Image (cartoon, rainbow, N blue to C red; front, side, top):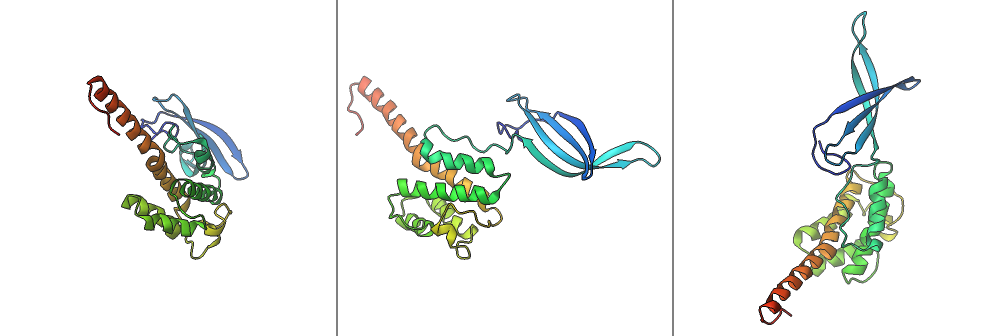
Length: 219
């Protein structure tokens, strides 16, 4: 498994603390430490004890397990090249994902629309039309264009047109919709912010070498 803090794979070293029983069932906390980032991962578990005939508990049948620290598994860290005004809604969408898929999807749709309006040079409208403009522009790599277009299909905009007209509304979500929106935003961050900055830096490094060698710089 991967550590939900740092996303680096690690071998589990489990420690279980029993919390006892209430009207809903038996509870314990599973504690694991990541050897890479040294952080603890806590999971609240509901279980049913299985007893040996006439004897002690043989094992626990785990009924449910909920990650409580960190609150949600980490996603790819927001690249430093991404300005705060573009990353705020994305960060909150990741934060609320375990608690409310609807809220996460609403935040990510609003974030997606803001990115397209500010970076894709499109005519502002509803989100569905803006996605179509970006796809038709031919300015995006085909895989990225297909991924953005899938936001409409996975989100079932035809059945829920309000998702397009009021992108930040809390509305029913389809299976995988909230996670897909976040994946697409991460791809857009890379395309609009990370890659241009890296190319700019590489060009600056090359021009320095050319200048040091007495040769004309790249324009």
